[in-house]
Image 1 (cartoon, rainbow, N blue to C red):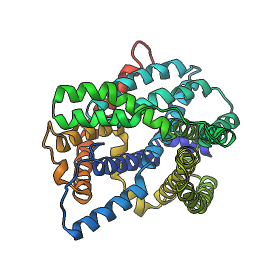
Image 2 (cartoon, rainbow, N blue to C red):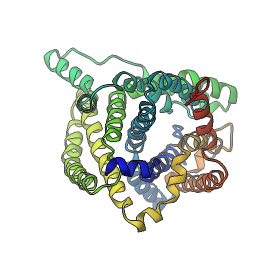
Image 3 (cartoon, rainbow, N blue to C red):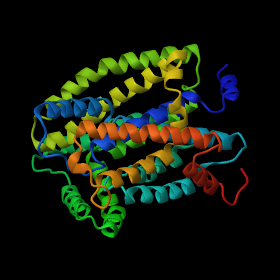
Length: 392
C-alpha cells in the first residue's frame, strides 16, 4: 500500500510544507538576530522592552536550533528521494551527489557573502559527505549511525577525559576572536571588506562555531535520520505511520522536560562541564523539541483544515534554497551599515514584524513564480548543473 501511495504522490506535500515551515522559522530567528549583527536600540520604553523580551523568548524557545534541525532532517530525506530515483534506474547517485555538494558550496559562498559568520549551507556541504559513505548501508546500520552521532560522542569524550584528568581542556578554536573581527568590519560599512571578510573569516568562524556548539555531529545524525525516514517512507500517509508519529510525539514531549531541566542544571556547573555535557544535553533537548514540532506538523497536516491553513508553505518549501539565500541578501540591506542600517532602531518586536513581512513577500513571489515555472530560480540552476553532462 505504501509503495502504491508513493507512486500516486511522487512529491510528498507534507515535506514541502514542513520545509517551508522550517525556512519561515529560520527567517524569523535571523531577523531577531539581525543576521548575526547584534546592534539594537539602546533606549526603549519599559513596556516595549518587556514586549521585546517576550518576543525573543517565544521565538527562540520555539525555533532557535530547531528550524535548522528540521532543515537538516529534510536534507537527508531529499538525498533518499534522489538516491532512490537513481537506484530505480540501476544507477548510483553517490558521485553525482558529491558534485551536487560542490555546487552547494557555491551557493553557500553567495549566501555567506551577505550573512556574516552565520551560514549553515557550508556545514551541510562538509557534513553531507556522511550520506555519500553510508548510502549503501542497511536501514539498521543507518539508524544506529544516526543515534551514535546524535549522542554527541565527542562532547562525552572530553567530559570523561576531564573527569579522569582535571587539567584536560577543550581545544581553543578562537571563535570569539573571529566573531569580534567580523563585527568590526561589519560596523565599518565598507561593502567590499564586508563581502570578502564574510566568505573567508566569516565562513571559518561559522564552521568552528558549529564544532563548539555540537552541530557537526547533530547535523550528521539528522541527515542520516532523514535518510532513514525516507527509506521507511514515514512521510507517506498510512494509518500505521500515523500511529508511529503519535508515539514519536508523545515520547519526545515527555523527554523534553527532563532533558531541558538537566541542561539547565548542568549549565550551572564549571565551564568545561558546560561545554561538554552541557552541549550534549542542549542538543538533546532541542532534538526532542524538534521531533515534537515535526511529529505535530505531520499529524496535523492530515487534517484538511490545517493543510489548507498552511498550504502556502508548500510553495515556500519548494523554493527553500532561493528563499534562504534571498532572505540573507534582503536582511543585510535592511540591517547593516552599507544598506539602510536599521539595526540600531529595531528591537526584537519590530525585527519580528520585518521578518514576517519579508516572509509574506517571499511567499507571494513563490506562488507567482511557480505558477509559471516548475522550480525556483536557484533550484533550477542547482538541478540543471547537478545533471550536466549526463542523461537522467
